[in-house]
Amino acid sequence: MTVDGTNSNEQVILVTGGYDHTIKIWQPHTGVCQRTAEHTDSQVNALDITPDKYLIAAAGYQHIRMYDLVSNNPNPIINYEGVSKNITGLGFQEEGKWMYTGGEDCSARIWDLRQIQIGFRYHVNCLLQKYKNNK
Image (cartoon, rainbow, N blue to C red; front, side):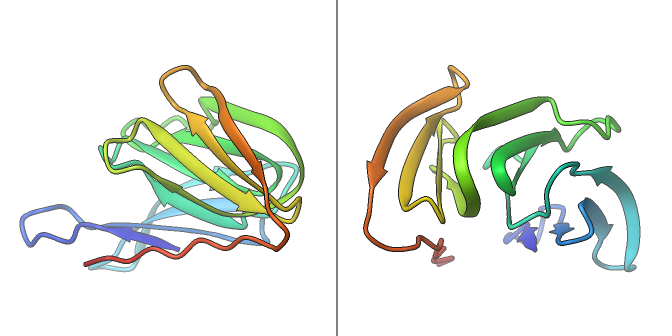
């Protein structure tokens, strides 16, 4: 689950995903589901919203899919592949130029969103999980 909209004048966005292979965008004040997108081939292990609030990143087994948050298109607009196991954590650099992922293949990856490709890959000796410190 991801919630964004920390300032009182920002629209609050609530996005959920899980083992039902769907991503849901909710109106948190009413509890109404505004939109559902299929995340085919995999459960959703991790979600995040880009800093500009235009895209949702959904990570699962062996891939990351990016969905357009602004349009009503239910299909992913970008698909990142090349990971051998479950991706269990992801997030974005503050300016939205990079996305980081980690997971069961013991690799931390930094993806260049400007070129839609992996920028760096690091092997680590433990399972990675994302920690986000919202100050």
